[in-house]
Image (cartoon, rainbow, N blue to C red):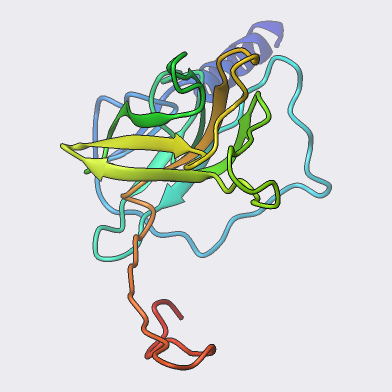
Length: 205
């Protein structure tokens, strides 16, 4: 009887740790499906357990139609690959002769694959104008596609740090979206002689 129990336990252990394949005889993961799959729902434990210190997340995201692309992301598998949404920070030291002007900075981010939005910024030095004291400096900061990559521009036009101050440094925080999961919609609106207006049609709904 002892031998039989041992064999049953051994068989259960093999079954739990084995890889399972559907429509394939060579599964590559714990579960490999060769074909389409449909589920009527997912069941989660209540309450949801928190990840342990040595555990990592995995999440699945579906792109809009007509692609309907489904991708699983896990930093432990592909630590250098982009996620659907990425946060990138650039710290850029300016030209010492101007101290606050970044005319063009090439991020090398592919503008055909990604959408870039400047989410926030910072500048290390106070700026001033040499004309009227009541003028308020307004930063001009842009992210724009050119030549297949995203470029950055930052400047306090008409203003500059005082000559006694060190060269300024911009901190630009970018949100970078994978275009497979994000839409870019553009519209131009002319208010004419009015100060109010409305979109001619909803861009998304």
